[in-house]
Structures are given as C-alpha cells and as structure tokens.
Amino acid sequence: MNTKIAFEPVGQALNEWYRTIMKNDIDKAKMMREDIQTILPDMEENEYVLIYFKLIDIRLKLLIERYEESGDILGEIREKALRTPTDDIIQYYFFFFSGMYEFYCKKYTKAITNYKIAEKMLGKIPDEIEKAEFHYQVAIAYYQIRQNLISLNHAENALESYQAHDDYISRTIKCKMLFAMNKVDLQLWDDATQLYQDAIRLAKKSQDRISEALGYFNLGFCYERQEQLTKAKSCFESAVEIPEHLESIHSSIRSMYMLSRVYYKMGTINKGREWRDIALRNTENVNEDVYKAKLNIIYFLYDNMNLKELDVNMTILKEKKLWSDVAELSENVAVHFKKKNDSKISSKYFEEASKAKDQILRLTEDACKLKEKS
Image 1 (tube, one colour):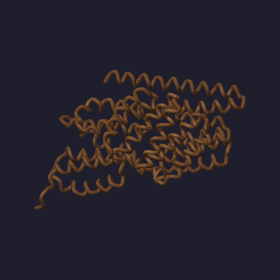
Image 2 (tube, one colour):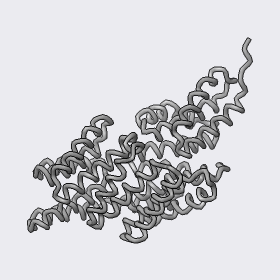
Image 3 (cartoon, helix red, strand yellow):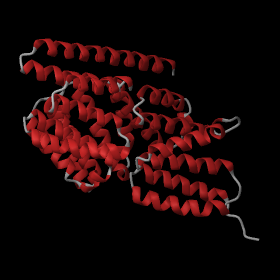
Image 4 (cartoon, one colour):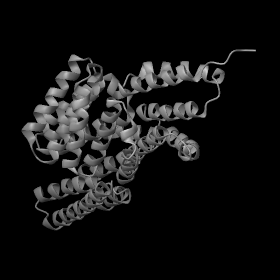
C-alpha cells in the first residue's frame, strides 16, 4: 500500500506557488502548478488544501488572462468555500479573487463590493505582501471609477510594503504607474510624466519587459490627453515593439487601439486604419467586445463618418456602464466636430460627456457608501 503524502508540505508548496504568481513569474508559476497537481492525488485527504489549490489556480488563470476559466472555478467552489464552518482565509481568498474576476469583467462596482467583504477578513492575514496585494487591486478598482483620492490612499499602502521587498520590483513599478494614472486624472501632468518615466527606467533596469511596455502605454496616454500626439505615437510604438507585450492579447489590443486613435487624430488615416484592423482582428480572437466597440467608434468618427453606427457602439459601452470610456470618447467626438465648426453635433456630444460624468459621480457616491459601511 502506497504511503500518502502529508498535506502540510503540500500547503507550503501552495503558499510558494502563490508568491511566485504575485511576482508575475508566469513560466515558473505554470511549472509549479504542474508539479503540485501531480502530487495531489497521492496526498492525505484534506478538503481545505484542495479548495486552496483551486483558489490559487484561479489567481494564476486571472494572471494569464484565462478569465472564463477562472469564473467557472469560482462558481464550482463557491458552496464549499463559503459553507460553515470554514476557514476565514479561504473565504478571504474567495471574495478577493471574486473581486479580481469582476474587475477583469469590467464590473468595477461589483469588484469593490467583493473587496469590501474580503477586507473584513484581511486582519486574519499575517502576510504583509498579501495585504499589499489587496491594497493594490483595490486601488486599481477605485481608479476605474475615478475615485482618485481613495485609489491613491490604497496605492500608497501597497507601495510601502512592496518597496521593502526587493523581489517584488514588478509590483513596485506598477504602483508607481498607478500613482501616475491618478495624477493624469487630476491633470497633474508633470508629476504623472515623471512617475511614468521613473517606472520605465526601473522596468528596463530589472529587465521587466511587460512593465516597460505598460509604462510606455500609460505615458503615451498621458501625452495623448495633452494633445501631444507625436510623443504619444512614439510611446505606443515603443509598447507594441516589445514581444512580451504582444503575447498578452488583451494588453496589446489597448496599445494598438491607442496607436490607431493617435494616427487618426494626426490625419494619417491609412496608418490609423491599419492599426485599427490589426486590433479588431485580435478582439475577435478573444471576444473583447469593449475594445471592438471603441475601435468602431474611432473608425466611424475619423475614417468612415457614420454617426448612427458610432452611437450604436457608444451604446454598447453605456450598457456595460463604462462611463469613463463614454465620457472620454464623447469628448473626443465633440472636440472633433468643434474643430470643424459644427456646433450642433459638437454640443450634442459635449452633453453626452457631461451625462456620463454624472454617472461616474453616482458610482463614486456608491463607492463612498461602501467605504462608510466597512
């Protein structure tokens, strides 16, 4: 009779696996998953460890953009993870990863709701890096609904912990960029530019090509918001020249979309169309409806003028409650027609942008209520 493997060392291996995931070491994390999955059938029976394995597997799938699979596992383990009696740590991870899943589905208020539930159990988590990871993810969610001061507060909590550990340099870089993203919203352009440039230098020094590409993308967005289109184009081109960035289809679509948008704004229609077509093909491969709609909006604005089709695609963003995107794109449309001295259409879309900003304010008020309840 074969001797069963004790569950304690398997639990320790799961902890190491999770730490590897948080360091964004994807190749090593995939290998560790295979090793752990091989020994699970020979482990002493322990439901806690089996659920923990599935939870960490969800986190890996979120990292490698296999979002549907992560959602399926969350549904599969929900009853076991939440039933009484169970471990607070298991429930913490369930709600934390549920929040991350909702975030990747672009359901930001649902993400925050799950994070607030997880936060009630955060005190049971002894690991400083795990708490930093929580604050980092929460900061991103609040940024998406333009609750910038709350986002900055969580980002600062995360950065303090990450900077104290040399092996979490990737997260340190991303925290700096998150600071910069909020600074862009607050129109603190010089602060944002300096933070992005620091992040890019740090990424290059640590040979973190994914973070380097993300830095170029965000710096390009910062320049585009200031209508410094030549600088923006250069940044987006730098991002799409990095092979590791292109391997992440979702991330590369964003850069291609922005590169297309900048070319269109510059009047270089053929190049704008070229990048739009490449990005559009990629959206079809991963069922990315949001960026498909955004690519169609810029196409029907700059390339093949059709306000009816433009509004159809704008409605897709409204139905998904992506009010920041609606506000930003409506302003782009309004400015475009203002330059053409078409005040009627320009006024319509400035009004659309204003309505979208009102919706952002409502989301902000809801977020504040959630914070007060916690």
